Length: 89
Image (cartoon, rainbow, N blue to C red; front, top):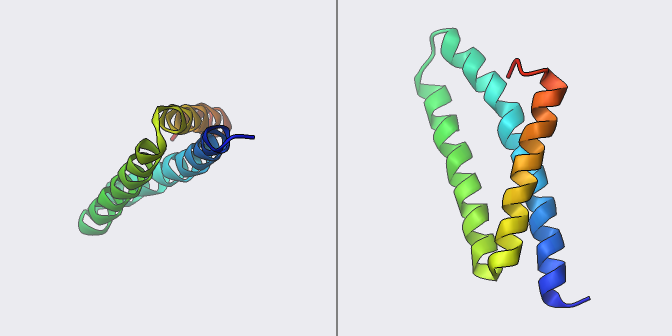
């Protein structure tokens, strides 16, 4: 297996894992915002985006295929989380 194929598989796995965490925590953040607290959910939201951006940036440094695979993993994780929560998140 070449390095690019390995990076592509790892990019997909990283995107799937990060996407699942990203979208599963979204429901909790919305609950926190609805309860009235603003500062803590805002900080957590910015942290979620920073981690997502940093991972995608790292995948982009590895090449186009790992980046595309990572993005595909994030999209697949979104679909799976929405199915699991039946669209309530």
